[in-house]
Image (cartoon, rainbow, N blue to C red; front, top):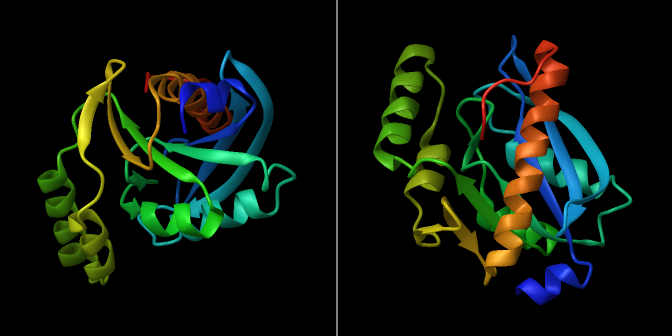
Length: 186
């Protein structure tokens, strides 16, 4: 996807989770295009520290009128709702989209692996699948447009800028709905 693809009307779905409350977390998706154009808001819930983030995203977009229009998914890193790890490759394949993981700080894969192992030791949960997703070789992580980007597919800088803006909006909406006020920055 190049900058001209996004400018030409390709839709981006940026997804963020609200603060963790009880066993479920609100997942908000903002559908938009470059230039700050927002065309829709989607929402769903996923389990805190669960394994349903990938299926939750597929279901959320699959039930949407935007299903056939979205060409790029943007997520705030590989883990949502605590330790609910997304299978970015399967997500892109199932939805026929490119996937972009964006973070302000450089992803710390060893920290996430240690957190998953500690979670398993504390709860007895089987985390082998999630460990495999984190360890799985994926796209290279690089600093672009002032954020760390891991992309699954060729994605231009214009699409990254548009995705980051939509991701910030998704984060603010999820936070505002979950706790009554948006907090922090992406």
